[in-house]
Image (cartoon, rainbow, N blue to C red; front, top):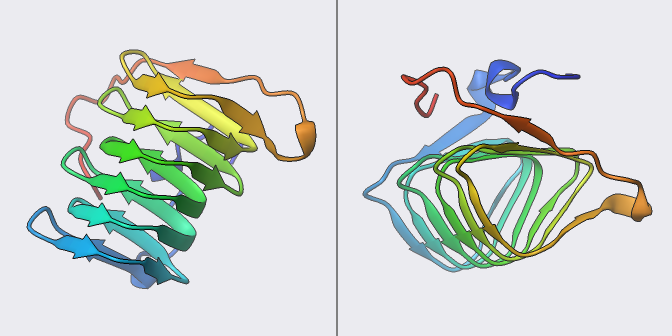
Length: 136
């Protein structure tokens, strides 16, 4: 997955769960597969696979995921086992713990980025060139 966008490398569309923009959840949300979130969550989110947050998605709470694509808003700590990709519309207020990070020009972050086990971090910056890119 070196230098490959997370949304381009989805492996198993069968194991994904989709929560549309009209969904509001208060409490803990967790699952073993991928989650495509466009709704609002007030509480913690834990996903073993890919967490894809669309532009209308927001989470107020702690996030833990295998990988993550953020186009929405997060207020709270994010812990990602592998890679987080923050899109141009992404907005974070909180700290990030990850192995790799890609940040689009125009993304907003108010917090710190830390790596697992103190490894040095070299962020990848990108310009979103696919204007029609939407939640899968």
